[in-house]
Length: 125
Image 1 (tube, rainbow, N blue to C red):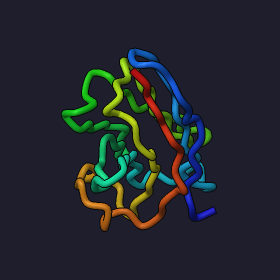
Image 2 (cartoon, helix red, strand yellow):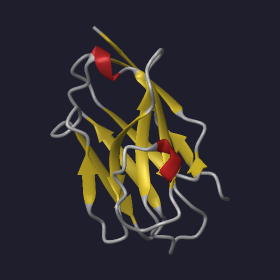
Image 3 (cartoon, rainbow, N blue to C red):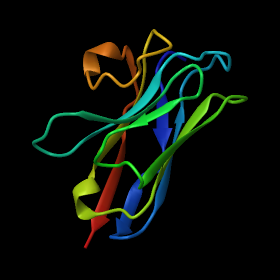
C-alpha cells in the first residue's frame, strides 16, 4: 500500500473532540515523515502536524496546544487527536507520507509523495 488511509472524521459541536487515524504505510518499519494537512473550502492545503523518524512532532501555530499527534510504531498508524475544536477547524483532513525521514514540517505539499483521500471534519457552533 503506497497510499496512506485516513479514518475518524465526523461532525462535532464546538469544543468537542475527534481522533483521526492514518495507516501511513504497509511497511511497519517505514519511518519516513508523516504529516497531517487540512484544506477548507476556498483555501490552500495547510500542514498542521508532522512526525519524523525519531518521533519528534511539529505543529502549526493554529493547532498547537489543541491537537496532538501520536505514532504507533508497531502498526505504523499515526493518530491526530483534535481537542477544543472550533468552527474554523472545519476542513478535509489529509494524511501524507514523504520520502525522507527528517525536516518533515515543510508546509509544502510538494514535499509529500503519497496522499490519502482525506476525511471530513465539520465543527458546528
